[in-house]
Length: 228
Image 1 (cartoon, helix red, strand yellow):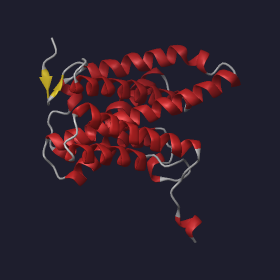
Image 2: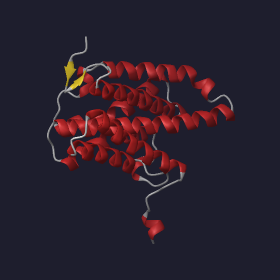
Image 3: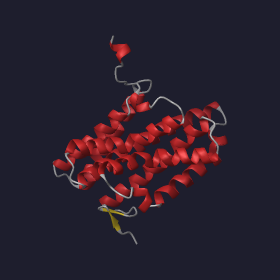
Image 4: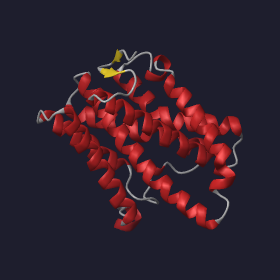
């Protein structure tokens, strides 16, 4: 039975809220996968990869919940998120030799990783913005919640893997800005009283389009060195 938790059904179904829950699961799987891959590439063991995978997936939502004063944080109540993370990490590690076997499968794998990460970012920025709206915080804070949910897990992942935090450096294409665009689009659609499925479509579509454009056309924010 799917009870209602925080205005969203506990498990995915065909309602608008259930669709959002399904997107949340999808984002969790994608980010657990990307965290596990990063950790494996940095030589971490099974435990390290599982921890980094889980933190990448639930870290952003955890920071958001603490920021909004939501206690206990979501995955302590909805333990299915942790289970999803652990299953994803296990499967990723089991398939690791196949994924990195030759340069052909490796480049396909990179593409899949990029597009699935963009999908995860798009889902999470909408979920985060919706959490803010539900608690009645000002629109700008709802946008911040969306950006946090989509990016802070990745910040913690980068710190644990001893890499520069991707969202703060322009060695990679714009990332956090795409989450902000998606969250802002969702908040705007909510202010315009659009139906829930339309809001989700607008928010996810805006973030996804922005992120795919960013890595396709190598769009970066200027740095001080490039400005001077």
